[in-house]
Length: 520
Image 1 (spheres, rainbow, N blue to C red):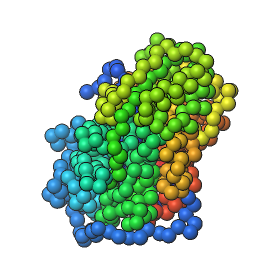
Image 2: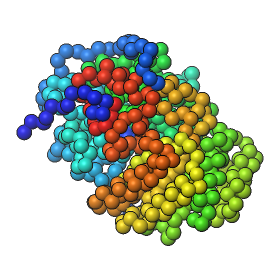
Image 3: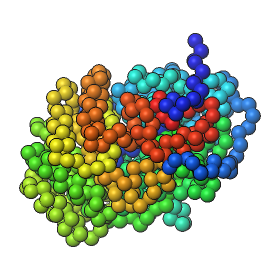
Image 4: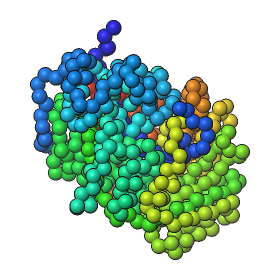
């Protein structure tokens, strides 16, 4: 039986993202896939010029028109059902999508392989899915799993494009498949740093393309703010070396517009900074102080000295004997400054911490400590953008819904993580990159972790119900790297930038090769 021809691009609501590398978890990833212990399975576009086309290379005519021809034409490895390693290769990071059965997986060895893979898809009308780290919350990068509304696809995987190359001008070029743990370790050895997420297995490609919230976000900016250039293969097979001056629209879209929106990224270049010393601190409070902690934290964390970043987590579930309140953070300045800032926050809560630990570490050691133990866990997740402070009544709603994670049968751990923004993030204009939430106070992530093989429906209902409960406070805004299949309006992710991003995507991919539900 032949596979259906992909839908042609029509309205903005039919566009899908193919998250190359999945999502950026940030420190909030400790809610689930990155570091919790437990069982683990094996602007408006008016007046904006169109893209200036400055391709590095153009596609050659023809290309493979059969699977055997594709296999013969690539330097990397093409896997299909029955291939050695297939049952491992088809898995993404979330085991809820373990029934994924793509038509094939092309593990590209370079940009040329990506061009060939796209040519095959064009010639055979085969749907395409992109993958680097495989952390897509919606499972779109699995290339055909139950509940994803993605057809069985050719997965073009850039996970093997993982080189990290430092340059004399203190920039670094990184393959999209490079995992954050390896990126941090390589940079730290050279005394350099970038700001990105904490989960060590996240691919830097997807993290960057969707924005990139991480533990140094207030002092370094979003990961996409540190991007200076990228290699992008558009669906017609053309290779573009994009930057602020070369193909500026494609570059703009790569800075927060989501992985796969305009093409396949095969390399990214970032500016680095000297690796700072890091003070890593953790404070826990009694659940009875939860509302007071939220109130004090939202006054403090988004407007603190930019050298300070923190996350506030309210969690419950079978991994906990009672709901927990934890503030984890990093400080990259002199320790005395941290003491003054953190002590002021604690005093503002009016509560005595149950514990308060702090340790001075090198950048490399701190990133490793924050990474925790990587593992695959089944989870449900969605998000809000915290664009306003909560009222007392809204704080009560937040606390109540976090505690209710313990009422969902089978919920091992669930609740909410508030990750501070502000600082350098707010110094970029809301239309200067595709990421629009420059004045927001925080990103908000709702999660639930459950046993592999369990019905995800009640856990999806919990996280989406939590998001709905906070809508009076924060509206429908969401973070593209915490994508949710139930969010059907791409403007919820991209706000004023939606129309420009849609126009760029239409120009880069006029036939809709990169089509996924409810994207631009």
